[in-house]
Length: 196
Image 1: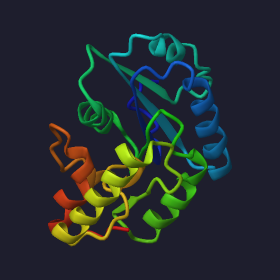
Image 2: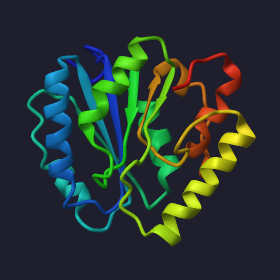
Image 3: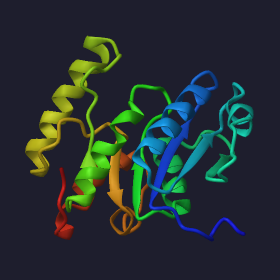
């Protein structure tokens, strides 16, 4: 059997940069959530040039179900490039992306899937309990999100979050570069799709 056989329903995409301590915890949370969801899935981890042993931690993950793919990028290419690589390799009809720093709770994934199943093409999470300094990160983020929502007409709480679910055909139609992963809902807004 090859990697292309037995296509999963859901692909989980996780870009990682120097997250060695979080890898086993995050994987356990993803696996536990997906077992409860009871849908076929794969996890695509993208090591974005980590220098702290993240790749070794990924290689040590148990893979009895043969549903883990590890992409190892040479050098640190940035989150957009890592996500683009993950989207390229994802085989599921639904693709969920989340960060590897444990600020996104994998137990929320079933809520995203439920909304995609209900007809939405993109479902965006938001960092309600963000663990960042208020004046240097939270406040500027809130202002930027307000401006983006007004300017684009796409009413999202958090444009910067990676925690999103997509129909595969929607996300695979978008060319990503720079830091444009933040603006995917805006880039596809004119495609007559449903965003939540």
